[in-house]
Figure 1: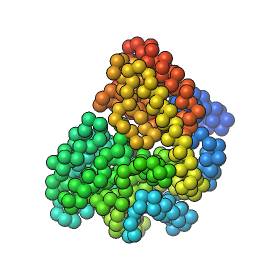
Figure 2: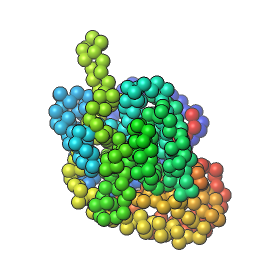
Figure 3: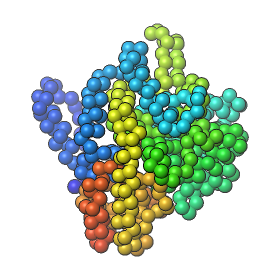
Figure 4: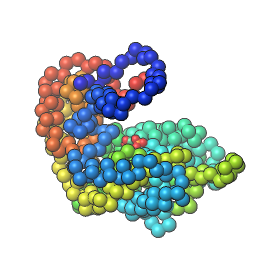
Length: 423
Ligand SMILES: Cc1ncc(COP(=O)(O)O)c(C=O)c1O
């Protein structure tokens, strides 16, 4: 199976069958269509899915999803169990991130929505001090969700250069900040290379300039606290730093919840009002939503609540202990292959590597040919892996296929870094 078997020829518009089909046929076709998908259950994906490979964990997640398959989180008055579980999840995350007394947190559908809400809140808070033409300052490695949020909220983006080790250059950030800056961003840790930005220094710049600082721990939020719990060296990135005003942490990444679960935490609970939309003028009366969606899936709330309660801190730490060892096996195996080099000094289970001797995208193509799905990194050219607990069982197989790919890399098909088909 290759990852690039997508047809570019126009397809006819699908129409609904006049008469419904038998459920067995519908389900069979669905599974048949799935045959062409990446085999995450065999450890072939290195992003998108974060499998633990544990039947007990998958069982809890399945149960939680089934229990709340049909409910709607739009109206917590109708489903108070959802409201309490959502509050438990946001409280537990705030606690994990050392949020002070008086902090507040909101549940969202994912990192992108948490970031969008954070940017909206920052724009509104800056408006209160008279900023009407705001900007966001973020290192080039920040997730595109910040640029997207700026686009939606009408803010200027100011991407800043990275150092040679791919971490944010704080002097470039300091230069880009002015009195119209509504938010400064740092990644703890970043997606492209898995390296930690200097969060202490960046948040200090924001503090000195009287503006907000978002520590993006969408990946790191459920990694770094457990690494710290294991006694591993982790620089501060959370509310223990006085300049950090808001943090995003995704339960649906290394929190192992099924998709649709993230938390945005603010130093002050009152700031949540800026992300709450209220409208009283429609005929049905007052309408209020605390995030972007209207009707909202209930199962992500249930899954996040269930998995955090099921694993507990010690459960996450035990998983992290193994994950650190697995990551180290991958890292050593990659570094031992001719020409390959890890980019920067990644702190957690995320590695990007390049080749000093071959076209690394050609190596990626040969891995694709064997069903492995490594994303591409553009600056510099590299292959990208987010390692999950399940990969422990597939590390040797991957490294052996990687060795074969390096030995016979051949020509690249010209597939660069991308997430989707072009329009
Ligand atoms: C550092 C970081 N921030 C934000 C996001 C966006 O999260 P999501 O894809 O859940 O919207 C990602 C996604 O991988 C990420 O790696």
